[in-house]
Length: 117
Image (cartoon, rainbow, N blue to C red; front, top):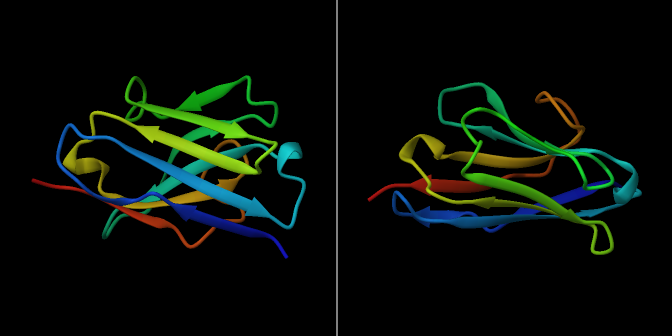
């Protein structure tokens, strides 16, 4: 059974940082491109960042460039998203999703990120 379990979300002040993790199981993690997708309240899902299976190519939405960093550890079957300089508009549920681009794919239950003073 494919499982993706996100963690690391929480409440953070504007300008703060969070590191999200996604533990994968039930498939050959190192053979699959991965991405982070977020969904803010009342809005549709938004692609944030993707990484290829070899972890040597990363891709970012304009909203994430220069502030977020996606990475993965294939030995640990884990995907990460380091988020710095967080803004209130980054508030959303963040999902770990299979695939490199777009918003479709297998996903976990998500982790809530709230940026507020």
